[in-house]
Image (cartoon, rainbow, N blue to C red; front, side):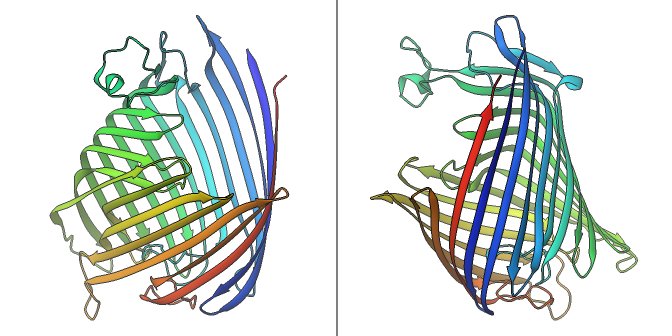
Length: 399
């Protein structure tokens, strides 16, 4: 049996200029965690019990004032595995994750979709994840490996953790407080899931079902999406998520305000995207057609195009991002635009100077949150520039 404890901090100060005026912001992130591993057979760290937590008190003024971001997770199951000659099997009671995330006085971003009012909001969520059973193994291309991806040179040259799940399940219960209170329930299940857990973070789901349920007062909206196949991957250089897949969505609304159930069928969703040239330079392109429920319990479809590029020049990490979004209301109210377009772009640069990370960025576009006035989302022109100076530190203790 082995164990480790870890901790870290990030202290940041920023100057911000927005459409409605200038502001200053400070934040301090404290994070810590611990892991305990136990071995089976020839694997020294086969099973893992891990706890992680972080808290970020922050202040911005004039504007939202004091706020905080909190997160915690507890997980148990097979640890990321690097031995391709052995596998670890976990059944339902011995493979699970619990999580908590909270935000106080969070401000919507310029690129956010229209599911909030134009005001700061609070959100609290608890999550759970498990599966019927998991096979944790590793993949690597050896010199005499004749598999196609190894022959073509696309396979991993160092052991990479690979998890195969049967009967994967995820659930989330969230509370959002703004002018109104929204209770969200989200569930996702997949017959089979294959996930890479290190280096390249990717997940393939076969026969996946997503169910979203939102309650605002007496109005209850439900939406469900069936995906025959879906690939979720995250760009390790920028954190941008890409989806490749195709599915069908449907919804219904039932409550006092809408006493009759109205159902729309054959609504297609899907996406495609990829990144090229990971490392000091590269580009990413993606399109995602997704369905969601707004703060007003409206079912909508969102077509979103994203493009990004990054390059490191003489110690400066430069980046550029752009998006274009087309929101279609599936049940528009009278005097309400059925289709709304938003779009924007961001330019940024980061450099480390004497242990401090200095980041400068500017973004502009047609956004639902160009200003904060408490009103319903309405597209308008907005811009933001920010200069952030941060100092980070971390330490790991492994007795």
